[in-house]
Every structure is written in structure tokens, then in C-alpha cells.
Length: 82
Image 1 (cartoon, rainbow, N blue to C red):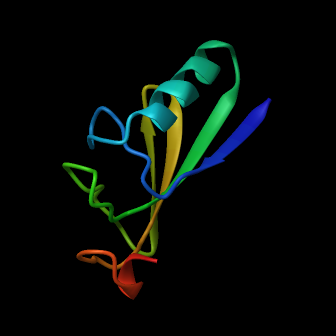
Image 2 (image 1 turned 135 degrees about the horizontal axis):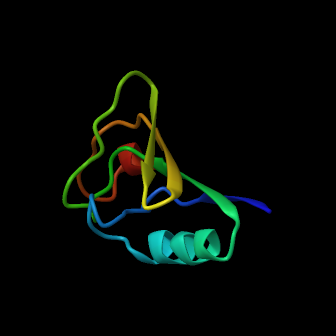
């Protein structure tokens, strides 16, 4: 089965928090599914932002495919965060 998980805060072992989407996706991959996570490039919970090449970047981490969408940086809870 193909699974698409959309979570703007999704992280990974390589990028830091938030880990839940990564570990769920990795478990699905171990069960034989193909999983793609779509996430924002900027997140206040991640330690290391992904390296972007253009408006989006594809990356595979432990069998989980990521699509990082270019998003602006933000501070606090203002409109730029939305």
C-alpha cells in the first residue's frame, strides 16, 4: 500500500523533533508499505532543518521518503507561522 502522511512538523533521526511521524512511517515500511511524508522545511521543533534545492526537496531516511516543501522562517505565533 502507498501511504502519504502530511505533517508540517514531521522530523526524523537526522533532523530532530517531532519523531512520531517518522517512527510510524518506519514501522509501516517494515510491514512492506511505501510511505511518503510531506513536511514544511521550517519548524520551530526541529533541531536541524533539511537542506533544500529549490521549492521542494526529496530525501529518503531509513526507507521513509520525505518531500520537504520550502516554507518561510517564522518566530512566535504570528501569521507567518500559518
